[in-house]
Structure formats: structure tokens, C-alpha cells
Amino acid sequence: MPELPEVETACRGIGPHLLGRILAGARVRESRLRWPVPPDLDAQLRGRRVAGVSRRGKYILIDLADTHLLLHLGMSGSLSVVDTDTSPRKHDHVDILLGDGRALRLHDPRRFGALLLVPGLPEQHPLLRDLGPEPLDAAWTGAALWCATRGRTAPIKTVIMDAHTVVGVGNIYASEALFRAGIRPGTPAQRLSRPACERLVAAIRETLQEALAAGGSSLRDYVQANGELGCFQLEHRVYGRDGQPCLACGGEIRMARMGQRSTFWCPRCQR
Image 1 (cartoon, rainbow, N blue to C red):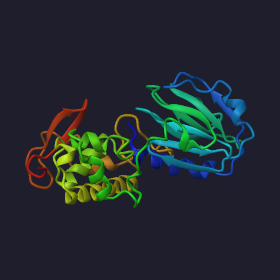
Image 2: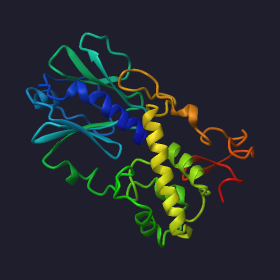
Image 3: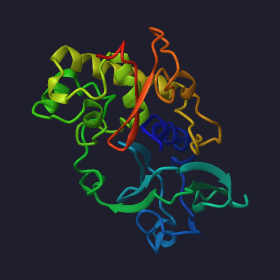
């Protein structure tokens, strides 16, 4: 599933191609995504100018002045900029026509993604208004995480993957950050000390920044907007490495199911 680094990479990749463009409409081949694509999308987009491209959590927002196009890549989605006469592949569901012979194309094999029109202020939309802080913002600190974990008995990995606590820390990067911070994933959140929360916030930032620099992690379907693979999966220290030696201590990496997700850790390095 595309996580924050993959979504931010996609956002940065498509931004230069979209900014300032006067859209020529849309071509919808399949409207049955997580929520139906607006039936009047073509008419709604035609003639609108793209004023900005940004990200909130795992959502991409395309600013069209008095409305926004909200995109979510779901479990397997990706975006690419193609010539409009490029033959669509299976699962190429929507083209946003850029008015210069090119299109922003949404590819989504599992159809768990979303493409919605949001009038007015996007932060008031139900999908966005209750989201927690951005992990790369300086305002999100160890003290803030410590306050958010008081009274919470759920495993710390589950808590940092909760978008109400902090946005965009999905399964891969939660496992990697907890390893860097030396914290076992199953530790009840309320047991973390202030110093542990400081370490974890720093580890989350470092992990996400390194993943961004690598273009994200390409597992299964994810590719960047230019069609290239991200390569952070080559730097995973625990994720997907169960049964292999820990790169820090040589002990065996363990794997278990936690919150219906695979969780990886080193019993020696994480306590």
C-alpha cells in the first residue's frame, strides 16, 4: 500500500506537469472506485486552472481555486503523466486531461483508491478534518507523542499507524522506525517514557526522509509518477526480513501479526 513517502513522491512527481495547466476535462473508464467517481467529472474539470498540488496524510490535493480534486491511491494505485493517445492498460481507470496532449492517469488494480471533488476548504472534508499532525512538521514533537499515548494500552505500533495520532506512518515505516528507536512494536503505548517518545519521533522522521530520498518502497504495484520503481525497500532493516540476521546485532528478525498486519522486529535490539 502506498504510504506517505510514496504519496509525497507521487505528489512531487506530478506537480511540475500540472501547475498552471488549464484542464481539458476527464476521461473515465471505470467509475467504481472506493467511492464512485463523480459522474460529471469531465464537465467539472474542463476549463479549470491548476493552482497547486499538495499532500495531506496519504491524500493528494489538486487545487482548482474554488474546489479541489482529492486523490487517494488506495492499496495498489499509482499516477503517471502520459500522452493522451497512449493506449490504456487494464486498470487505467481515469485520465485527467491536461490540455497539452497529455493526461494524468490513475491506475488502480484493486479499485480501493478514490478520486473526489471537494468544494470549499478541503480541510473541512470528512476524510481530512480529523487527521492528526504531519510527521515531518516541526510542530510534531516527542512531547506531543507522549501526551497522545497517555492512557492508551494499544501496542505502540498500532498507535503510530493511527491517522488520528499522526498521519502517513504505515506498516513498513512503523516497523522500520521502531527498530531505529529500539522500541518493541507490542509495547503498550502508555508505557513509553518521554525520552522513548523523543527517540521514536526522531526515528520516524529519519525513516520517512530517507524513504523520500529513495523514491519510496516498491512492493507489489507501486511505481513513481515517471514509471520508475522506488528503491527504499533495499534499505529495509527489519521489514520483510523475518528469519534473517539483524543488520545491527546478528540476531534473528522475528515476524508476527499485529492488528492484521505483518510486524517485524529484532528481539535483541528492541526492548
